Length: 496
Image 1 (spheres, rainbow, N blue to C red):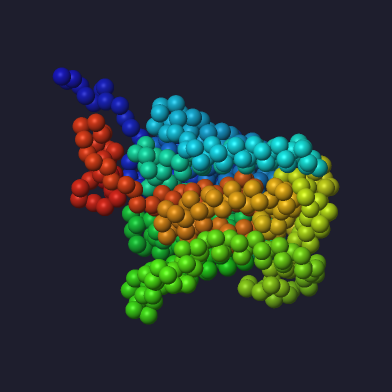
Image 2: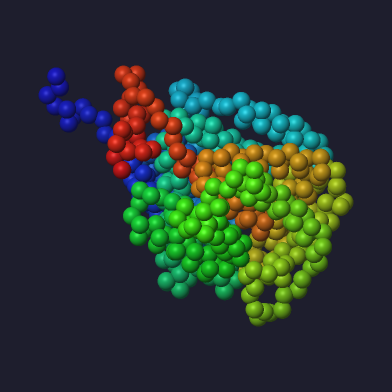
């Protein structure tokens, strides 16, 4: 018997409850965000070190990906073109990839056949786009930047119900990181700063208001559903996120979060209000039941068709200085999207079969790194573009880049991931709809950096709200992997 257990016991710093995951993720975000002001690489190193040492491996994967989405944006806001933002992002994504390899090596994770089949299809799509792209180097780099994080997220999703995943912690890790972003942005707002982009809309600690708004949209949905947190924190976090979306004047974020809020109210009200009871359990042969069953597909197809229709019929709109802001109108949407959409649709007409190439800019001048750097420099210093770099809509961008031959595969891949998350429950379905709505206003679906990476990570994290299957306790099951007989959806090792 050991007489001095306090000298030989191993200290375990890893969070084992959902609130502790949330607060540690918030603390890591604040420390890493503060360290950016000293050196971006110091911030990256601290984020990687703390995520690995203070969280379980599977939980740290989502925390690292959310950090990879946010920290480079803060670095770009502070240091502009001198920041090595892409390398910071790639380092954190690489660390998350190593965590996946670690779990696969231990035999605690495995990759499903459906994921392997999807990546087999990706290989064929890669051959098509590389052989027909107008810029092979850009397309290859864009494919690598997209497929590596996608593999990480699909590996996490494949092992959703494995004990080593601790899936219920994922949403808390992502929400904690977003809370750190919200605290930082609120801090600079109350200091009277954070309006560097156009002197009107809040960009907070990131470099563009739209980025802040679309980061806060999934935070509002996640915060409302983190039931292990105090009610005041959940409501305050959701309303704080909505306030930052409004301050950033992200019309896409505002519209998306309000539509999802209406959907959530109808879903929750159907349980209690007699007038809404038919919405909760309609007859199986009714039209309402079929609409409810295929809701995600209807929203997805509608978004694709209306996006292409609007791009085909739009014309460049000149916005008068001082014009009143329009939130929910085609004029308000077209005021900032008409130019990119018209240009993208012209590219579709010119390259209908195979597109211009995966991740290739709509304007070929932006392929030159010097022109792109100068364009970004003038944007940050003068608040205007030489060349519009935004594509304006994810679905139009997919058809523009891949043509009618490649676009069906990439759209199908996107919908397949959305449907997998939506199948985990109502919260996953709401997050999937939120992602689709945000994709209408920004080309984020196949841009695994910044907003795109964050929204993909939040989407997969929402699957963690799925009801975990119960496992029978036995001598061969470690106690921390078994479920408590006194609590629903709660393992014995999870004290809170």
